[in-house]
Length: 109
Length: 113
Image (cartoon, chains in turn blue, green):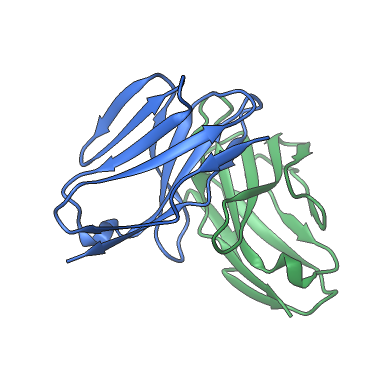
């Protein structure tokens, strides 16, 4: 079957670094997405990885290991506005996104 | 560019009623999607379309219907609403399967009582 696993909730301190992990098992693989979703709002695109390695985009970085079926999203210099849910999604062989349930990130001052 | 727009933002239905959720995109995207998001759950694909006149079922299509008569519009029809259809509905679009980043509308919060 198809499965995306990520932690339900994480807590971090403003100014710190946090890593949100995601493991995936999907029918085929055409890339791994991370989306941010603030409470009551729509998901917004953060990153896409299809090759192994780290992609850096400002304070956010995303890593992929295809052999391990593993990705993480790294958030640096945390700000209060980063409090949101972070959704991991795998693009399967039919180019459909299989979504995790999301990780709710709570930032404390 | 307005991006992806959805109406209405909120709706309360009685069991057995019908309604249409509207979705429009102005990015000339070929692919459009309807998802539902239940609390604590991942997004579930209801239907998708790869172009005008072409639609296909996703993971949870029962109780829903779609049509795609134009590139811009992709309405979702609920017939005989049931409490199990209480959810937040998101419409999304992408250029095609290669330009596969999906852009989401603001969502419709539907309650069926």
